[in-house]
Image (cartoon, rainbow, N blue to C red):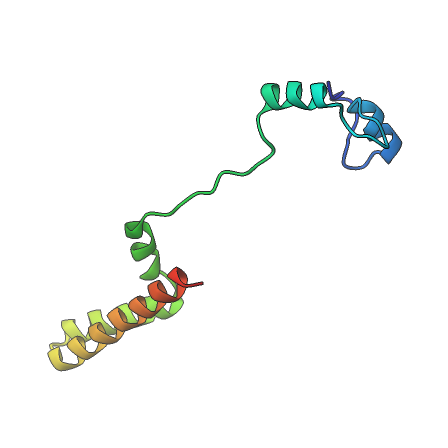
Length: 105
C-alpha cells in the first residue's frame, strides 16, 4: 500500500497518486475502494460526547470562575455570610449561563 519512505503531505501530486495506486482521473476502482474500506475502515472521525458531569465540572474552571470561587471562600473565612451567599448565587448563575450557552451552540 502506501510507502512509508515518502512524505505524502509534501510529495508532488503525481508521486502521491502513484504511491496510493490510484488513477488521476478516475480515483480508485470500486473493488479497490471496498478492499480499502474493509482493511482500514471508513474515513470518519468518531464524535465524542462529554457527559453532563464533565461539562458541569468544566464550567467551574476558568479565570473568572476561580475569582468568584476565591471571593466566596474569603467571604466564608471572614464570616460575611450575606456576601458568601450572594457570591455563591452569582457563581451558580454564571455556571448555568455557561452550560445553557454550550448546550444551544
